[in-house]
Image 1: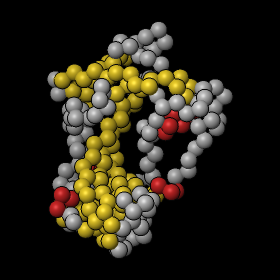
Image 2: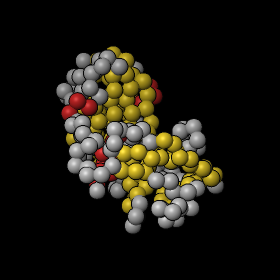
Image 3: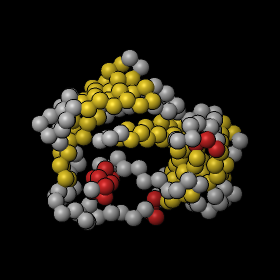
Image 4: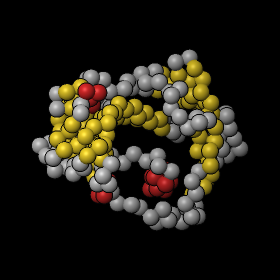
Length: 221
């Protein structure tokens, strides 16, 4: 069942398959799973009634959107904000998710504290917003204000030249990480982003937060 869930989320672009801490993975190294593999029956994402998020005294309704059906593998609905934007979802706030339930899904109420957005992010000792050029031939040093030991930070390097992007995962409490020399081959215009991820598991559900800070850069050898 876990494999089915992973394939289903991957088909919707919602999966988060990070490499082990202090390692990196390029996009061309990710094995693309066959959505039909290992599934005896198709999966249907069913409606859960009225779904809302409460954060910072603001209630944000989540509405069902059609799931991007992949063959006969999965279909149904995904819940998101009306315009699928995240502006109404602040960092470092307590979130309460409620669902009234339906004929097939019981009512749900879970709560968790979201992490803060990564702060004081530096690339090679320069504040991220001031970085003009990133030299990848010598490795890329990253730094940030350390966070919770249960959280994970991952860096994302993307060049617009068509070369594979790279994701590197680090322990949040370390406050620093290194993209090794040779891990990324992109050149020219691109983007560097640092994400902070927090996952909280409940008896029948899971909440995952992903807040990022990023900036456009020029990559050079």
